[in-house]
Length: 314
Image 1 (cartoon, rainbow, N blue to C red):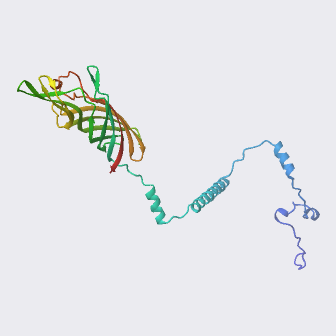
Image 2: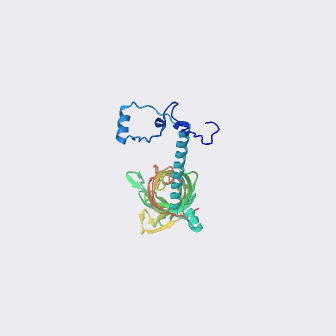
């Protein structure tokens, strides 16, 4: 009724809860409905029967996945770096310097001076079916070697050696006077050994630190000739008592120089000490054939075996 204060207004649900028009109040009442959730097995069965479809992630999902991967990578890198840092011990300055000195590459010496001692076996030569000059001769001296590359070196030395077992070449001198017949003072000189000062020039090739091949040329200067001297007096063709002595200085009839070629091999046996073997071929005729009346080629060829020891390196 208009104008009456007691007018009663009906309260109706609004929005989604409002019942459709022309519905009774009974029908517009809200009812509590229990929705039954499907179980896991039911979902699995439903997924198994349905045709799978490709689900394309949205841009937001892509961004979330990218950020997640970055975070995981950062955590792994942080873990590895922390493990690396904690595993490396902290070294003092003294220990670092000592370690650096121990790992410093040592430069091998480029020059050597070594002493050599050994023996040279001269095969000798034959004259009228008799072999002369065959025997063992001493070799002693020093050499200086300089590296010219990582594998090659040149050396020069100064050695003393001899050629022994000389016996066939003789020279006879006679002084004759006539006094109640013919009387002669006879001197017979027979050289027995020649002494040489040798200068060898060699090229060396290092196969490795313990093995070396060598090739060289040497020239020897005649220092002296050791001779056997016989003196006696001959009267009317009859020789008297003979006096025999040994002396030096009779170098006449010998060449002043003796040259040789050589090839060799050196092997280190321990630090600074090497064993050396060489094949030597003589190029010179040692004696003057016309002076001694002998027609033969007298050359010093043979094999040398020696030990060398490094006495100076720089």
